[in-house]
Structures are given as C-alpha cells and as structure tokens.
Length: 227
Picture 1: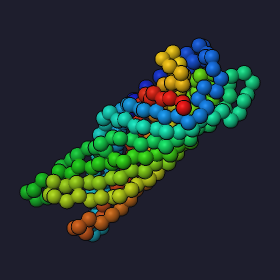
Picture 2: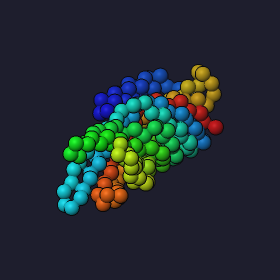
Picture 3: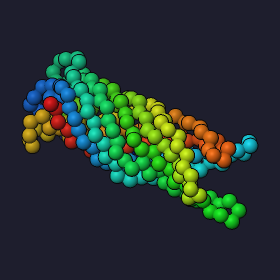
Picture 4: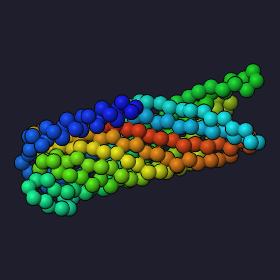
C-alpha cells in the first residue's frame, strides 16, 4: 500500500507540472458547493489483541481491495495573490462505501480450529483542505481531518464481538484540475489519505479483553462537479 501512496504522489507531481505549464482560462473555477465520486485502491489493517488473566496474543489483520466513496463539500479562494497563484480553502464530508473486509486468520484451541474475520466499515470523514492554485483551474492541497468507522470481529465458533464506533485523525494530500473540455463545472483529481483510528477495548462473552486499532489507507481518482 505504501507503493500506492508513492505512485499517487508521483502522479500528483507530474500532473501539477503539466498544470503549471498548460494553464487554464477561468479564475476561481472551484468556488462553491461541489460533489464528487471516488474510486481507487484501499487497505484496511488491524491488530487484534486478545488478553485474559495477564496473558495476551496479537493477531495482525490486513486486506487490500478496490474502494469507492462519495464526497460533498464547499471550496473558496480565500487569498488573492499576485497572478494566478492564489490560496484556496475547502471543507468536506465523505462516506467510504467499502465492504470493510480487514482479512481473516485461523487459530487453534486444542483440537479445534477457529476462523476469525475482521470488518471495518461505515467510514465517515470530515476534512479541511488548504490549497494552492498552480494555475487558474488547478489546485494542489493538503488534507487534514477526522474520521470514524465501525469494527467487528467474527469467530467461526458462532459469536461476533462489536467494537462499535472508533474514531481518529486523518491526513493526506491531493490535486484537482478542471475538466471543462467535457462540460462546464466538471473537474477530476487524485488523492491519497490515511485514517488512524484510535484503539478501543471491549470484553467478550468469555471474559477476554479484545482490543482493536484499525488503519485505513485510500488512494483514488475522483470526478466532481461544482454547483
């Protein structure tokens, strides 16, 4: 997944160079309410800790698969510098529709084998995006925010432990550019972010203490519209 982040960063650098070289025609192209759909590759990892009577075991989970998301936000140029290189600020809310699969593993109890699966889904994020106009229709931006998701672990022995809502900070970076050749107010972009959910502990029906700490990594292409 780190390769995906590096690739996304390289693509952003390449496209920003093209944006600076190519320029554009409409100032403050991104001002206003916008919506976007997003598609890319994501990774959900988790370290499940099972503790009882002072003993503990750590089980690493991880899964990489396609992800999609929907975002609604507001963008505004907040500082008009000399020329086209202005400062922009955006805020948005996003829902990640992944199925939440965090992977599976097996463990043995005497002669029995238990299959554990983890799931982290219903991922919501709130983000602030300070940006810089590279050209009149191209912005590079940082992404800072907060997110939450719901995690559960299921055993083949027939029980499910729900951790409920876990939340934590988000950080990332991105680039977006006008796509007015296909229609007015359209844009496309590249983005990558990491969401680090804080650890949470619960007790299961057997008296074990279970601890979950998921991390979500998402690299994507998005297509949007400024209303």
